[in-house]
Image 1: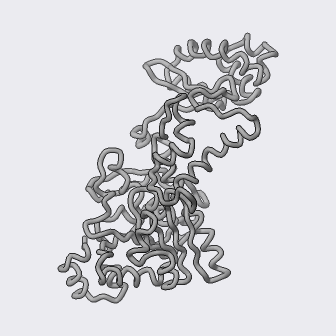
Image 2: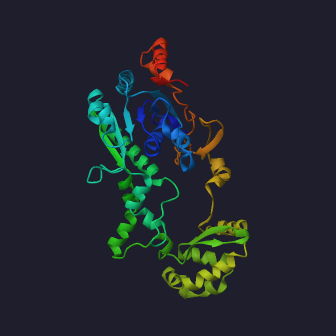
Length: 395
C-alpha cells in the first residue's frame, strides 16, 4: 500500500492563514505529506481563541503542520520569513486584498524572490467588481444562492457547516497542484486563487442548469418537487427519524416486496417512476403510517437487506462512535493544543486503500519555531535574543 504521507513528500509549503478557508487548503496538502509551516503572529493565530461555533476550527484544520510564531511587522521577523519563503514551493494566504502587499509579502514581491513559487490566494471574490468586499462563508452562501436553496421559501438558511470555506480551500489546493504540475515543464511559479463567492456559484450550478434546461426556477429544497415518489425523512418509533429513498423502478419492486405492499406491487401503473410521482400524495401518507410501526434499527435492517438507499438522521457528536468510521480509519486520534485527546475526520480519500494519517498533532504556538529558525542558520543565542525582544514565540 502507498502511504499517503509520501505523495507530496519534499514539497515545502509556507502558510500565512487564519480561520478556515486558508488553513483548509494547507491541511489538504499537509495530509498528503507536504511540509506545511504555519507562520503565526506572536501570541498565536487568533483562531486558536475562538469560542462558540468556532471553537474547533484550529484543531480541525491545522493538524500535520508546523508552527513558526514570529512578528512579521518587525524588520528581523520579515527578513526571516522571506528567507523561509525563498526556498519554498508553495505560499498560501487568505488575508484581505492588499494586506500582504503592504507588508512586502504580495505576489510580485515573493515571485521576484522565488520565481518557482506557487502563490495561492484564498479570497472572498475573484477579480471583478466585488473583489474589494469583505466576505465570509455565510455572505457567500447568501449571495451565491445556496442559502436560498437550503431554507424554506422566503427563509434563506445557511448550510450547517462551513461548506464554502472548506470547499474553497479544496479548490485552492487543486489549483496549487495544477500549477505544480505545469512547473515541472516550465520551472516557473504561478499566482492561483480560489474564492468563496465563485465556489458557491459553482455548487449551485446544477440549479442554474435546471433553469436553463427547463425554464423553471429551482425551488428551495424544502419546497422542491421531488424527482421520485419516495425520497423523504420519515418518523419511526421512539421519536427517531430515517431517510428513505426509492429511486428506480427496480427498487420500487424490491421495496414493495420487502414491506409486503402487494397491492402496489401488482399495480402496473405504479411500476413507472413518473406515475408514482403523480401519486405521491397517496403514497407518502401510507408510508408514514407504516414506518411508525418500526424502530429505527428494524427499519434500517430491512432496508439494508433489500439494498435500498437509507440513512439514519445523525448528529455530529454521534459520528465519534460510527462503526464504519472507526473501522475504516475515518477518524484520526490526536491531542489538541488546549489539552485533551480527540478523534477528528481524516481527509475523505484513500490511496491504494490507505487513508491519510496523523503524523503531527495540531501544533502549540511556536512549537517548531526553534527548529525552523535553526534550519535557516540561526544560532541558539540568536533565537534566544529574538525571544527576549518579543519577536518570536517558542513552545
